[in-house]
Image (cartoon, rainbow, N blue to C red):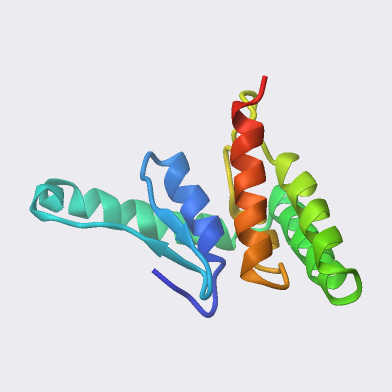
Length: 137
């Protein structure tokens, strides 16, 4: 699922709230899902939840405004700061979006910030650092 108009990561977060698991992808920003015959029984419910998720993702909210500000700040930092510094700052900022158990309940801002990283090597390192932080006590 891709869109030139809507933030697909926000749509993915809204789908997660409704119980659906869609994988987030970058370059370009997309949502990935696997569909097979077993899903025919839930196809209508999926499409209804997808439509509601798009509507919800388009609605202004403080959380969404904060996410957009964080992504814009990361984009600006990526233009003027050294890449390694941007990677570190983005990783620390992404950790702020975690839930009570440290895992993010919503990931739109995190994926948006990772999309600002100057190169894919930084992204790989950032993901490894984030995964490592989830398992450390």
